[in-house]
Image: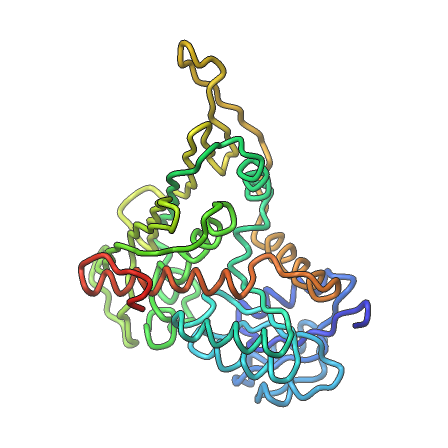
Length: 351
């Protein structure tokens, strides 16, 4: 492959334009074509980013002989079809989160990309590229935490419902037939992705979960709104490790985001990065070591995400979040939604 990665963007709405902006700052990649079913979206993106080749049918984009890779930033309901078509066309793929509507679709995506010998990266990797995540990975891998037995991830928005409070033009977030679900699949996938990255046992076996919709005043919407605003999931892994995920688009509570990892020798709070351990076993006095690793904004996260994917393609290595990890995340999400429907714990062989 050339030292410059030729990329096409499929879906150039708000999220697609985030990718275009991030790619504009990459020296070893260039966007040679874009595709979107909406003419207005194509016009805005082509004019802003000076892109000549614009297609309403993404198959025309995939037929370009000099195209190396695509970024898929459409709504989730067509991620699987576009990914499989791109794989057949021999293009590497970076797919927006959530990876798919369900784990069955995700499995087909992984199979298609492996069969075609192309890379498949998932954009939930945004949770993995932060300095805090990288340092946490080092601490876990070094054994400083001992045996990890529990972790807790919390992501609560005061009011952050896509299609209502934010991204108001993107009503598809509210429709389960297009989005796959609500808060859990949309933003909870970031925490699930991070847990799979940091924790040694990444084989989920069962989930017990609840979901809720109805926070705040009754909404009068002309569009379908059948997805959850809050989810709580307790996940068991093969080794006995347990992880809880609490996720909310909307809550009558202070906005809060936290990730905690509990180990037999030490514990971690991811942000601000803090390592908890003992310095004197006899009197059991504890010590906490904190590190100011700074915060990175959304635009920087985007740049780190696309940079990792570009380098993975050019250097023939796995992207930060692989399709296989994306599949595991979708399995957890599937079990959680089924558990909430059935009001009981669901095992992985039930999805």
